[in-house]
Image (cartoon, rainbow, N blue to C red; front, side, top):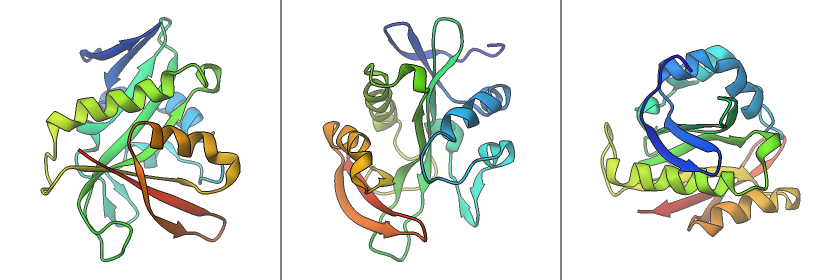
Length: 182
């Protein structure tokens, strides 16, 4: 790793860092390889990873809220890409929140506690940080597939305090929407 931000947390042989834009540029191929493992999600390109927009939606302060984890050999172990999401005129996102856009753990490190640790670290890191651009009561949000085969991920979110608040339908799936109040 050429640019080393301070370590946010450590877990077993893993180090968790703030995912800066420079780090994302350096590790874009590895990040996309891990993120593109998420079932039924559109593959992400390098340009999409580095963009501060998703379609028309601005990803406010993406490089201040995202985390990345590496093993002792600097191999990507997991990533949470998050941003401040503006409230929308719908039941799913009626308040500003810090939204997890992508959360993935390298398949070599799944079911070893890293995902839960990364998620807990994300919450504990961002809670005192709060909103940097938006305002309101701090809440975290995420969407994940609602199918039974994804119960492990749904249970992971619920295990750290997220509550299902809505669903969101797409052409190929239905996602559960989860919120966590700080």
